[in-house]
Amino acid sequence: MEWFTAAFRLIRLKVSRLRQEWLRPIGGPVGRMRRRLVLLIGMCSIAAAVFAFPGTVMSTGSRLCKTAVFQPRLADFCGAMGIEGIPSHDERLAWEALPAGDCEAIEGYRRRYPKGAFRSVADARLAIVRVDYGPQWTDTTSLRDNLYARDSLPPFPSQHGAEADVEKRAQAEAVERCQDSSFTVPREMARFSSADLTKKRQSCRGSADGGFACSMSFTAVCHMRIRLPRQVCG
Image (tube, rainbow, N blue to C red):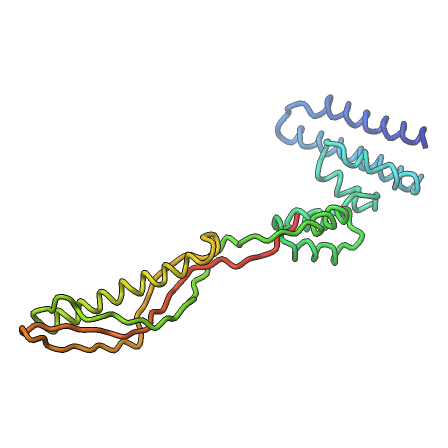
């Protein structure tokens, strides 16, 4: 095992030296050709070792595959060769595409790659679950309450003015009632949006001095914006 580890170190050293000598800042076709040649040499070295000493390479080759040179192509090649602990190209892309903290997506990765290279990391993230609130706000109707606006004081000279006044006071009372109800939950969960009046029944009458006073029974409909709780893993 010691001699084989030394051999791998030698391969990595050779590839590193080739990289330093051949991959100087040269643009154009010549630079691209040099980079591809060095990458091919490294891949051929790993492939030859796999076929010659499969058991030993599977246990020690992952260190060479994780070197900073030619990533992620080198790691994808190692994954295709079946090197232990190295993901395939498809598995790597699937892991990198996982939304941060998405429990369902992590669980989906485990089902798709039950023996994947990131299985232990996925298990650790699923073991840490907390409750958070999603970034999207959703409009909803959270409350309906029957209310009553009293007679106008003092009376208005016209019935039209008294009707407009009681409508205004009823709307203000509905907004106040809905805003009060929104404070019963944390601000990060729900916010007041608007209030509507339904089932309105006005009652107007004349006063002794010739004025008009109106009252109204109504139902306040509260519209809120809420964020639904969700589980976050990791």
